[in-house]
Image (cartoon, rainbow, N blue to C red; front, side):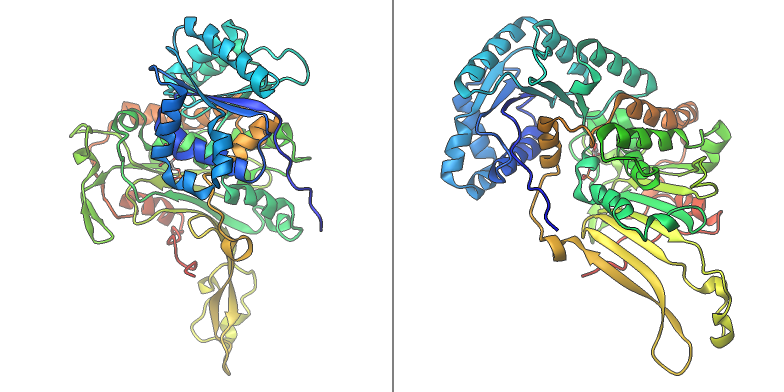
Length: 511
Ligand code: BG6
């Protein structure tokens, strides 16, 4: 089968607001370099780093070179020489419209020198409080205006998109006053992960998957995003946000929507995002009683990870010693649709878990016939392990199918076996930051992997009742799990009450 090779993106300037921060050096510049290496950037290309303080282009190039030695080494010096001379700086106060005129003049100068045709990608890598102001200031000086059908001006914003439903709506409104929805690209970096995109391929490019992807065959679904790291150096953000806001309305619901959505009628941005939003809207709203019964929150105390003593959340730098912020969340969600009637989706995510595992488990129903218990002593039909599909999003990316087979020998003895697919066996393991596809897609004008305004708002609608009940009833039992454990016991009980169990992450997948 021949497939079209991707072509270079159109000429453009990437304008990074907040370019002095972590995201730019850890993800954005390496991703842009990888695109360059793969020939996916136009020759007519430039980067403008927008910074708070006065830093010359020379100084900024030197800073990048010092901070990213491995990135610079990986590429040949000629490519670098080419890249370097296309990096400029602009210094302005993000909130003050005055400096934006100068930015506009700089962009016009670059357009004239580098033939970038007035196409600008504004990447807001700033704290969220600046998003609305920057959009308004860009619009005020005419930088959001697309002069003709061939010219584009786009805005990428990073999460968090608001702090709750009301602030998300407010942010969407301010953005819409200054940019049209087709110009706004909201990043959820989970959608940039190859393995998340592969769920689409697995479901919709194979004829054997969809016919059994429903309540007739599937007993329940588990989605786990376990992190081994603690709060790191993000105390001020995390204390304010907590695990629920940080992970659920965005990353976990993005994965859930791709698992649960109906097949879109094309691989087109709006077709795909319509289906994602539709399935999220079908999630049964949680009543206050449901919140008490179907959700669990936790906070890690001191514990052991990989034989190392680690502090509890309340002992971490800059965290309130009596903090009530949750670092773990689990919940059961039901989807009101023909396909998913009666199939619970259990989701959990937390910090300081025993390891870093992002997995989706599709647990199928038991085989209907009881024929084997007659030939195998002591085996009851319900003891036969059900088939399980494990989609490993990270690490050790791949898919396992677990099914029953006859063990060799004279009797009909059955055991679980695994068919496993590892990404790296087929496709190698080219290191990517996860941002390459997203930046490239934005330059090409493909919003498929970005969130639309309605998708963001429905995510907040789903968690709103949880935020309300948790806010009204502060916990008394924090910390309630030790670092290095799989969250509080209530998370296990959530499934046990339904006669189910979390799958142990990381099992069945050792290479
Ligand atoms: C971020 C959250 O959006 O996602 C972090 O703010 C979290 O708290 C991170 O650690 C997880 O992303 P990944 O790609 O490491 O799973």
